[in-house]
Amino acid sequence: MPSVPDLIQGVQSADRASLGRAITLIESILPEHRQLAQELLAELLPHSGSAHRIGITGVPGVGKSTFIETLGKTLTRRGHRVAVLTVDPTSSKTGGSIMGDKTRMASLANDPSAFVRPSPTGGELGGVNRMTRETILLCEAAGFDVVLVETVGVGQSETVVADMVDFFLVLMLPGAGDELQGIKKGILELADMIAVNKADGDNAQAATAAAREYEVALHLTAPSSPLWSPPVLTCAGLTGAGLDELWAQVEEHRRLLSDAGELERLREEQNVRWMWSMLDDRLIEALRNHPTVKSLLVKMESQVRAGQTTPVSAVEKLIETFLDH
Image 1 (cartoon, rainbow, N blue to C red):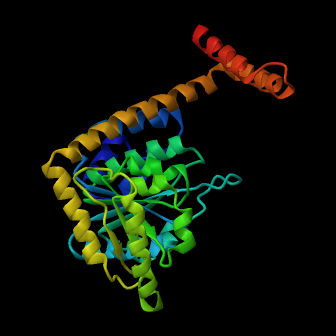
Image 2 (tube, one colour):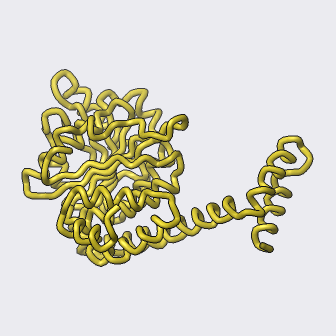
């Protein structure tokens, strides 16, 4: 592993190999690596923060990878430098990433103005929170001005990603119908835009009809900002149709929030929530790894399983032991 000064120089020189090694360092769970990672981040933090951070989610089969690759290529042709980070579910058996992101976005990954990085979470949302946020900062320090964060999982990961980006895009499929019933209200409340993807060929009419239904659904939710009413658009990731209009809306959202000072406030609030999330993670980690608590945990689990003590009593005993030692 190169030294921290070498990594800093490499990242600031936009060297993709150095950026990859820096991200590997912050993903490490080794205590000595964590200290080096914090030194690295402290030096690079002043050079971060200027990128447009966009979260992207969607129902299974919506075509997120194709959409992101086409959008990324569109943006690099316009002179942007684009980083794509994925919050990737991890195999509970092997610990490896389920989705091979560089395989799914081969053309974009080979674009010299782009950087594609899968981020295995280890099955822990806390891991998503820490690693992805810190990776965003590193990409910004390396000069990437657009960071796309894709959530390929389902459930809570959408909330985690929405809380680290400036704009949250939800991709949907044509033919609302039953699908509309399956959309969690919480996801709609997070959305800054809904885009009905695959709106080409025989799907065009169904996509338009779906967009109208999603517009009605959005009217029943409170927008994330009083300055912005989330639009519903149709697009086709395969052909690029509708992506110019979509990006124009994303930029308009940024302009409105920036001019009103709301973007700055949003980031401040996100940083505070990040701090508390990190504190929760560190405290749990410290408790689990505490030598005395570690041995007591096995005993408490056994007693709870056997009905010899209640979960509440076990927790109180464990916390008391942690605080006393």
